[in-house]
Amino acid sequence: MYEPAAGHGLPHDPFNAIVGPRPIGWVGTEDKQGRRNLAPYSFFNAFNYVPPIVGFASIGEKDSVSNARATGAFTWNLATRPLAEAMNATSVAAPHGVDEFALAGLSTAPSRMIGPPRVAASPVSFECRVSQIIRLQGADGEPVDSWLVLGEVVVVHIDERLLVDGVYDTAAADPILRGGGAADYFRITAQERFQMRRPSQ
Image (tube, rainbow, N blue to C red; front, side, top):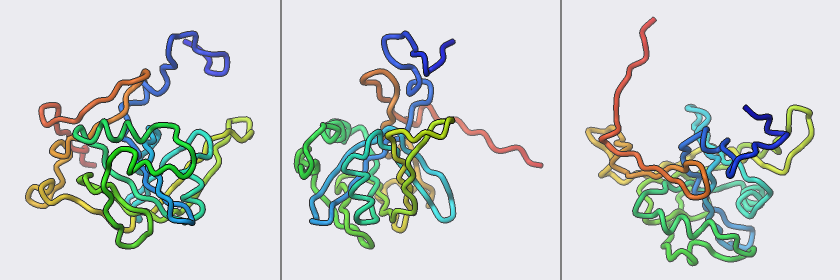
């Protein structure tokens, strides 16, 4: 047992390993001048069905946050095992204005309803319009240097090979998820699948 405010006393903070593995928010944005940015966020998830809303949290107001604030849009791109090294390359702390798409050798695909581009090689991507940007705060009401960016998904792009009889096959996409520690990731495979239906009333 430990109190986070007093420190964990361990070689690595276990918090993000306990809350995991987590989907990766591989977020594409551009600034008002059209300069592109691509960055992965391990604090990412879906928050609503109708309308579909996803969000990512950034520790510090990084380019993804400021670009989303300025343009009102971002893309989410599925990080897969074949794209893992490229995704990791985009996590570099590059100066403002550096194009991480180009840095990682990734081709872009145009979005249909928003400005920021998508990762062309990603089998699934969302076009999102910003719905809220919230500065997080502690239980004491004091603001912290973290920002939650929520966006409504307005277009979904899916590689048709991932649709089996019209149903999306999660494992076939070979997604990767962020674990804990300094470098742990996990894969979703068909071998690990099990089914459990919700109890009826």
